[in-house]
Length: 601
Image 1 (spheres, rainbow, N blue to C red):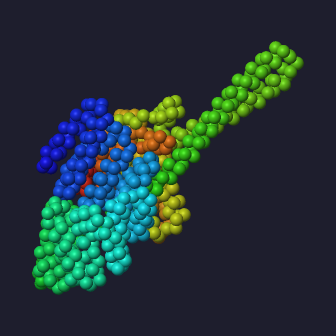
Image 2: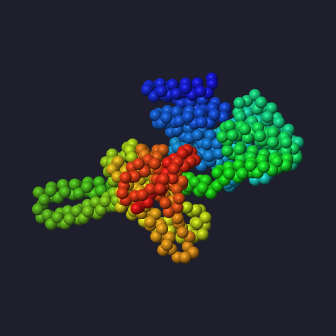
């Protein structure tokens, strides 16, 4: 069935299921969308595949099926990784990891460990790649199938190639080939031959390399997987270069580049640019070689530049932060439970003792004095229990907004809510990674603590709700937990006051001390707000406006507050503010976005 008709049929099935109660129909529609996604992925139509995953996620959400949600996230991460968006891929994989852990699903954990390892592998963090590959291999060896083991053998082989150990890599690739040959899996046999050829090239055995690569190309001749076609052509081009055949390298790497550009595969495009740059240089075509070099450098910087590395670090820190928050929430929940239990036990003791007092007073008036003393003691005990309860309540209010905390205490849970017109503020410190290298751990933590403590006071003064901090990033929002008139203006004023504080803070620092210049970005929109997890007391918000607000921050400038066109329309008539239009600027993953710098008059 042609791709568009599969997409339309999937949508029809999805709509039928959305109005019908049958769980079996939901599962069938979900599986149909996932199968159609696999077909679209093989054909290289990745945007269609992502659209089908959106449908599958909606079906999984409606069924409250944690396993299917995680499977959708893994598939989305695989596609994003293939497109070269490693940060997005890693974010999806970590989210899936949390879901698999929550249901103790070993097969899912093995899959996502392998996927996280592959992102670190592409990012040249070979230590972490090996760590996650090993975690996956242990689970696969316990309960995996031969096909699943073959995937790990393939990845370990590729890792050893990149560590310049082709002899060791060959042993893994041959294990993989043996399994795939027994299963008669033609597509994976082609992958194995391609990798074996790459190892022979590293060993300077170019004839053997070409032999295995041509075997792979022959197996792929009747298959629709354009990604593999392009990968084999690129490797043939690299062998042509090693053999001193630049014209053949231009042909093979040119074919691979056409596939990469059509499918928008950034990693393959980068390899092809490098191959063609060298080939045209050997052919004496300096202008074309230089043009390809510029494209290679630009693409490399976009994939592995400082900002991308910083975002990757932020994702890693967020993953570690969420794990620590979970551990902390368990302790806090236990404290609350113990305080509540102590309070109830105190009330029970008071009731029992009061009854004893009444009966004893009727029976023996002579012991009235002793009972009165006992009652005074009980009142003091109740006062102590009440103070502990108030302390626990204050702890809860430090984590959650008051209304949400009251709902949680009263009902044992708090419902997620749609909140309109929320203004989201993001800040972070420019060049944080190199600056932090010049400070000790104690100095770095003390500096961030001082700044964020000041930000907390500013946020509270302007009626904003602090959401969280991740590394050097600070996130707050105006108009939570309930919509509030003027919250956009309050958020802008809070951001300006934060910038004023940072400028004054840097001026007061001793000469030669690193200065932490800050960017701030704001966007306004409708979000979903609620508590993350059942036992994890963390108030958070979700929705596209959160992503746009983050782009406002990363697309801004130091010592400036950058706001979106949506926020600008809400505050443009304020006489205390002035604006500098920045026009429509391109933001990766979002297209053209209207931005303004805002300041006080």
